[in-house]
Each structure stands twice: as structure tokens, then as C-alpha cells.
Amino acid sequence: METESEPYVRLATLRQLHQVVADLNTARSLADTLQTVADGIIAGLGYELSAVNLVRPDGDLVVAAVAGSAGAEALMAGRVGSRVSWERRLAMGDHWGDLRFIPYTEGWVLDDDDVPQWHTTGPAPRFADEWHPMDRLFAPMYTAGASGGELLGVISVDKPRNGRRPGAWGREALQMYAFQAAIAISNARLRANMQRALVRLEREQQALRASEESFRQAFEYAPSGMAIAEMGGDQHGRLHRTNDALCRLLGRSASQMRRYSFSDLVHPEDVGTLLRTSAEGGRAELRLGRRDGTYVWVSLRNSVVADAADGPRFLLTHVEDIEERKRHELQLAHRASHDSLTGLPNSAELRARLGSRLCDRPAGSETHAAAVGPYGCLDGFAEVESAAYGHGFGADVGPDYTPERGGDCAPDEYRGGPEAGYDHHVHTIAPDEETDDGIKGLAVLFCDLDGFKSINDRFGHHTGDAVLIEVARRLSNGVRDGDTVARLGGDEFVVLADGLGCADAEDLAVRLRNAIIPPIRVEGRAVRVGASFGIGWAACGMSAEEVLASADQRMYVEKRSRSKAGRRAG
Image 1: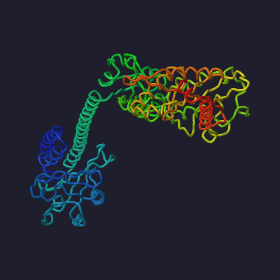
Image 2: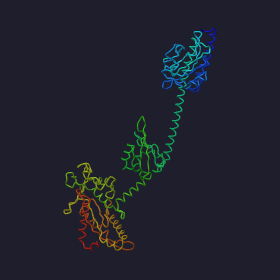
Image 3: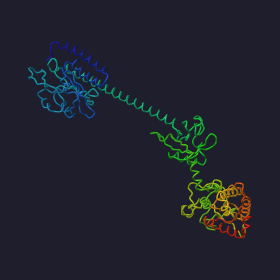
Image 4: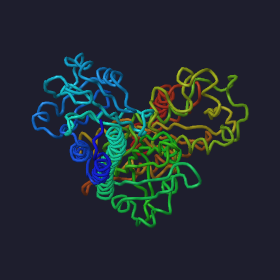
């Protein structure tokens, strides 16, 4: 029953309720807000004990705050009650609006469940509205403020100061307070989430700034060249950024480098390699142009920097100077293919160059070129020869060449079928030496020095080596730029001269013999050697060994045709 001072109690309660609700919005954290909710029950609504049970992410409820009793707080705080047990409580007892009241006559069935609780025994009530220590009153809190929202938590209250069960006004006040408490807790959670998000964002930004600074330092101060280039669009390949090492390597400033793309700087012969490497995001070795017009060998290693939305955007390129390694490789390749004494191509290189001009289809076969020009080769030979040799016979063969396979003239088994290897092949044709039909062919002049052994035996190997070096020089000076002078070994040399007729080859042999005859001075001593030449002709359908053997045989025929004294005199 209501007392005579009920209007005054309502006004006082309203004032206290207003104050505690205002205090809810001053808490600085979620934990402070939960404790303020529990304290507000004691301070503003006239209960001696309160607890705030908060729904966890897994659905169970944890006792997040207790007010009014240190013993109850020690026993209950932090303990968890299952969602099933709480739903059972909220479905029992009397429904006072959103409140749930379970009288002691019904609540005894809840004494042994897993929900944390604090109560004391006491005598039976003396009148109908007297509060019993085993009574339970719960005020659910919902996210939307009303019972239709998601359960946020439950406020438990006990021991009203006036010893009575709350009347209509007390129930309304508790329900109103639970509504405001739900709003305060939701706001506190939102602030806490925002604070955590801001902290996480700040940490991510700090990590990003640290990562960017690390990349900047690694990029700028890398000992080898680094560049960032655009991929796709009208500015494909344009350099956005280059480091100091790359600028020093190419002799250009960073502002000058931004005017170029790698395709502007690469050697013309390496453009295809560059484009394939850029598209694949792989690596390649090629030459880049310096400001002074020279080229430097570099190794490019590319990484595609992808945008999650738009796909590949930029190309991060690592540029390493490999000029010394390439020079060393070229030196090793030169040593492997050239005679160490004279510097001329050696026997293996000679056979490689000769074999690259031969195929296993002799002249007159179905696949042999029908249109033979006046020099015994197809029109456009110069272009094909340039592609195969660079500058005629004087250039080294390409890296994919092997003596067994040859070049464009390789046999069918290496060229992918009977027709595949001959689409662009220039057949080598030998002129008819008996009729001198005017055909220009590839002459093979086999040279053997006369009298060299006696010089070597009499004056020693040092003098013999000096003679060989001088003979090599004279032979090289006596041929055209595109011809090959090679040393087979010992005192044997071979000259490959293309585009010669029979008379031309004989004239060349005479000139070279006359160039060798003059005395050679070695350490103040004059020595003389002669030379015997055999002229053979290379032709498709022959092997390199067969061509050399033919020229060798003709050399011995020519040597035997002259007396020993005549050979020495030339």
C-alpha cells in the first residue's frame, strides 16, 4: 500500500532519478558506465543492492558491476550465467511491463542454476507487499530501448530500503532507469569501439608511415639502381622515380630520368627483351644507354606493384650493374673460341662459323633456293648474313649456337621438320672450277707454313711463337673486314672468304703468300717462312669437316708441286 507521503516520495525520487541519469553520461569508459548504472540504483531508486549483468559476444551474461555490498561484489563480480538460465528467469514470474518479478514462492527453483546470485534467508512476509529476501526483481535492457530490441543486459535489484515491493511509481522509475541505462551502455560501447578503432587506425598509420620511410630509405640509399615505372596507359614505361645509384650509373639527374622510359634508354637490340620482361614481371640482362652515348650491361629484376581494384599499376625495377661480369664472360667466351697466342678464332670457332653456313640439302634439291644471284646466294644475303654474324665472319656466333646444330642451316632434326629450317636459309653454292661459271661462293683457303719447323727447332719456341703472331697479323691485314682468319693449330691457318669466284680465290692466295714471304725480325734476327695454300669451296650438303679436309688435301697437292727450295722462297 502507498504511504501518505507518496507525492513527496515521487518528487524526491524524480529528482534523484534525474541526477543519476545525468551521471550516466559523465562516465568516461564502458567499465565506469556499468559501475555508474549499478551505483545509480542505490543512490536514486532506493535499493540496497544492485548488479548489472552484461551480454557477452557468446550470448552468456557476465556480472559486470555490483553496488551496495562488498561481500556480494566479491562473490559475484566477473562470474558468468548462461543465456539459457537467464531466458528462463525472464520468462517466469510476474511481468510488470518490461520488469520481471519472481516472488520467493516461485524462485526457489532457481537456487541451484548457474546464474550468480546473492540473497539471505528471512521470515515469511507479515503483509502482502512486504519484500522477502528471496524475492527477485529484474530490469532487462534492450539495444533499441524497448523489449523489441536485442537484449543488452539485465539489472538485478534487491532489498528496497522501505522493505516493500515497489508500487506503480517505483516500477515505472526502475523501468525508465533501465531504458536510460541501456542507452548509456550502448553509447559507452560505441565510444569504446571508436576509441579502439582510432587506436588501431593510428597504429596502422604509424606502421604505414614506418613502412613508407623504410621503403624510401631502402629505395634512395640502395647501392644498386632502383626505379618505379608506370604500367599501362599512354605513359606506359615512363619513369616516375629513380634513386641516386641509377642516376650515377646512367649519368643523368633524377629530373632528366623522369623524361624517359626504359625503352628510350635500352639498346635497340634489347628492346624486345625489355618489353617481354616488363610484361612478365621477371628479370633480364640487357644494355642501357649512358648520357655519354655508351651502353652499360645491367640486370633488371621487375616486380609488379598491383592495385587491388584496378590491377597492375606500377613496375618496381631493380637495376644491377653487371658490366664487369659481362666483360669477364665475354673474355672467357673469347678465350674459349680464340687462339691464346695469336688472338685468331680457334679450330672450334672456325668449324662453328663454317658449319653455320652449311645445311644437309645440297644444291639442286627441291628445297634449294631457285633464285640464285650473281654471287651464288639469294637476294637479301647481306641482311641475312648480318643477322647471323653481326659483321660477317668476324663476329662471334650467338649464345644459342652449338657446333653440332649450326645456325640457320641446321639439319631437320634441330629445326623442327624438313621444311622449317629453310624458309630463310641462304644456300651456299660452290663454283664450277673447271668451267669458271661465274658463281661466287665461300672460299676456304687452307694455309700451311713452309720452313717453320726448322725455325722452331733452331731458334726455340719463343722465336716460333713470334713468327706465328706476325703471320697471323699479316694474314688478317690481307683479307676483308668480313672474312675470317683462324688458326687450326701448329703452323696451320684457314681463311674463309665469301663472295669469291675461282680466279678471285687464287688471287687472294697469291697475295697472302706474298704477304708472308718477307723476312720477320725477332730480337734482331731476320727469319723467313713460306706458305702453301689449298683452296676448297664450301657447299650445302657438305659438313665442315669435309670442307676442311678438301682444302687440306689441295694444300698438300700444291705443296708437293713445288720444290723444297721453291716453297721456302715462296
